[in-house]
Length: 195
Ligand SMILES: Cc1cc2nc3c(=O)[nH]c(=O)nc-3n(C[C@H](O)[C@H](O)[C@H](O)COP(=O)(O)O)c2cc1C
Image (cartoon, rainbow, N blue to C red; front, side, top):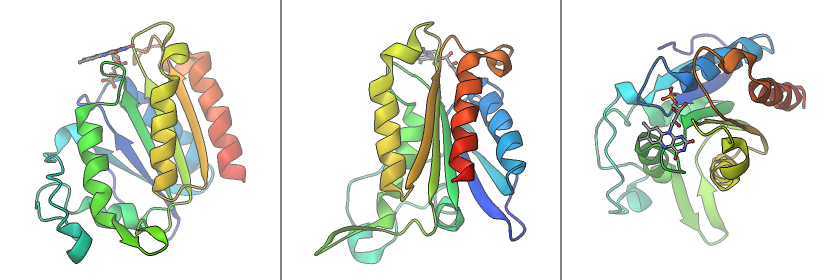
């Protein structure tokens, strides 16, 4: 795990796989190389190394602004609020994101306030988002568009006005560097970072 230190722009990188050395992690390495060259400092969160409970749906956070559950999610709220950009890298599990990632996302409900104008999202400065999905199916780039749209919607809810996304099918840590789908995602990130 790396940590934010300096005054550079910050990208929070979420590994939604339980495997910290799998394809999702490799993709984050590749993205980190790319965005570091664009002046971003990256911090990696391996959700598989943490114990994050599901959201209880108690809505206490709507009056206190804080989640009642104290666990490994607690320090992550500040990290999300301090980030300029968020990357989510996640494998497909039964045509959806992993439960690990879903728990993390649901717990971010504590940073959302309802007011007379709608939702006020306390995600600080997040302006750019990346959704990188990988899966075993060779045709996954064609069949998991619904999941990609869902993650893009979540990143927009978190405040990202600009989002790059991609699905890398037939993924394995050994081949992911050379996949045309990885290269296409990197081109999208290039464009995202230059806007
Ligand atoms: C529980 C489980 C469910 C999975 N479901 C799917 C699926 O629905 N579609 C698919 O294409 N791959 C599926 N896979 C394969 C993973 O998405 C694929 O191996 C991915 O590259 C693993 O990423 P990782 O190395 O970062 O963990 C599944 C794997 C597991 C362990």
